[in-house]
Image 1 (tube, rainbow, N blue to C red):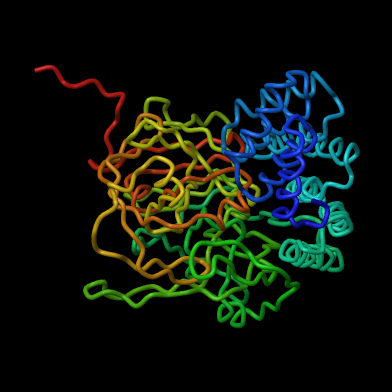
Image 2 (cartoon, helix red, strand yellow):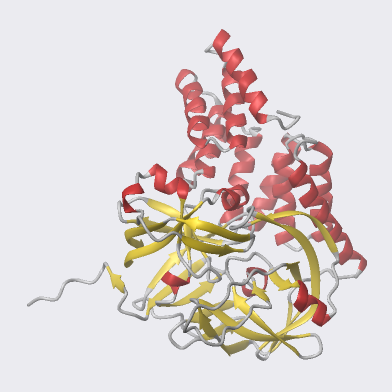
Amino acid sequence: MREGDYQKAAEAYRALLAKNPKDHPARLGLSLALLKLGNLNEAFDQAAEVLRQDPQSARARAVIGLALLRSGVFREAAEAFTAALLLNEREAIAWAGLAEIDFFENRTELSYQRLRRATALDPSEPDYWIALGRAAARLEKFREAAEYYERFLAVSPRMDVERRERYRGLIAFYRALSVLGITHLHRIEGGRAARIPFRLQRDRPFIQARAGNNVTLNLVIDTGASISVLSYEAAERLGVRPLARGGQARAVGGGGKFPIVYGLLDALDLGEIRIFNVPIYIRTIHHTAPSEGEGDMLRADGFLGLSVLANFRFTIDYAAQVLLLESDSPPGTAETPAEEGSEIPFRTTNGGLVSAEVKLHNGEVVNFLIDTGASATVVGVHVVKKYNLEKHILPSPKIRVLGAAGVIENVDLILLPSLSMNSLEQRNIRAPVLDLGAVNESAGFMQAGILGGSFLKHFRVTFDFSRARLRLVPQTEAIRSLSEKPSEG
């Protein structure tokens, strides 16, 4: 396990269990190895077997909690972690698990404190140092974050090449910020609100922003990007040079990843708002040729990601084609009326992306990423298999999908009878079926799909990160309210 060869570790634990099926440490070790390999169902079953034989096992309850958390089952995971700590208050897995839930649900300070406890109890677990660094970075403790990532490098297996390279790059970026004397990112000046028109193209909203010497940038409003992105060409126009590089980012398309290159925009103007010290990825941006009849097509210079957008309460009004940014709510200003639309709680992934609960036509409630930068709603191939949805896959056509990491050819389309969020339902959704393994590997909990522009364009959508709430106000006839009573007649 400590060498990072989880497949070999699982085989060794199975050999021990073949000799002694009541070897609880071996069975729990197998469960943890299976969690590392992404085999969540068997990991749960193995830990549950230990708990069946030993109901007082704090470790078994904690491992069950971790399997539930990775599956996106939050309430039961929290209950399992809490029960583990009642049995053994020094159970590091339980402290770290509760801290992850805090992080996903925007209780970052509590997450940070619990992770300090977990790392003190088990300083040899690499994942705890990554999680602590992530919490410190969200609190803008960048020097601390770099130190925690250094601790990860000190204890992580040499076989964990990809993550080690990624965090070396992030450490280099934080060190570069320190050299530049930058302690606060996304410093906001100017107006307290901005109303910016956008152009909807292939169900993606494009706005114009300004940077550098009044250079205009065409940016996609992209809640599927954790930090903002510029193309190499746009970065060159602005004179933005790489500050650091290292590792690969996980994404949909191509090989499922792209090289990470960090840069920093001195300032970005969004309407009357100016934002200083904006971190960016610099990467290749893939484009597709316009289809016949699409006319003049905008080419994206980059993506306006959540590291910028989450500093505001922001609304994307698809009908009016306007982005509204509000840095704070004026005193006495009422929220959108409670009867208008639907308010939905959301969580954030390890990378800061928005994830909310969606109900499928079969009644199953699953987690979907909310991605304004994606044209289409996407369903994960693992969900199709889990819920036996193959009968809904269309025999033709196969389509071509363009993602952040490149192009995927010959993609199946599924026709879902319905999707709903709270009481708002869309029927007969045509969605590409994609392997979301790369997305789920970095998310921290299971994502069943992506809600893209083909769904979101029917709403006025408000994101409120201070309250971790999403408000959807329907704007077209494509959305049906399940709470509406049928008219009498």
